[in-house]
Length: 274
Image (cartoon, rainbow, N blue to C red; front, side, top):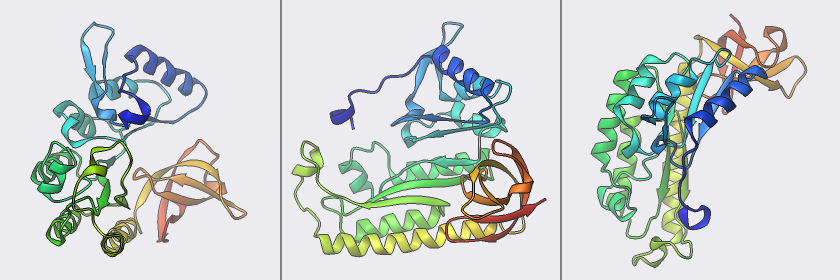
């Protein structure tokens, strides 16, 4: 990413807060903080001290009208105590975290220069879930990184089973000119990559379906975002980022409405007014 986009920079606290306040005044209810590695963000606060993402989220949660906060994408090594505490303390910070691990093999993680081990990641997940028991985890995975053996791939499958993701994105490794991985030996055959990706995506799909099914019968607040495909429908987002089909009578776009989940589809939840 630095090769194509340049080095990371952090916007100032004042800039971010001012933009969030403008959005709130315009009626925006949810704000997502975006960055290639957003939890590495740091900036000077009004008191002259250096703020991290956790403190920034606490400040944004004070803005009237902002009911929901999210951030993405994050890196395990930058998930500090203050940020984990924000998940515990802030009702506005939604219980959904995209925290990519990429692989479950320490050997492959080292080759990727990830700077953490599989055990580091799992212990971090435990800490986050202890702070926010209802949090849903999302991740990214790459199969077929140069040198990945069957044993390495099985380590990835094990970490997926242990974490149980609500959602995840998975890809085959493909060489990119100018990246260190493109010059590594032991490139994995495409047929092997295809087979591994198919197995991984099948497991991730089962987990996503199980998480969606676990919402059926529950009551939740949904932010109504847009008209639905069919007459009488609108589409909103659950706290766990799932699309939720709601009756148009439940609320207007921009409203946060209480609904009961009646059914889980492949990509959406269906609801009725609570």
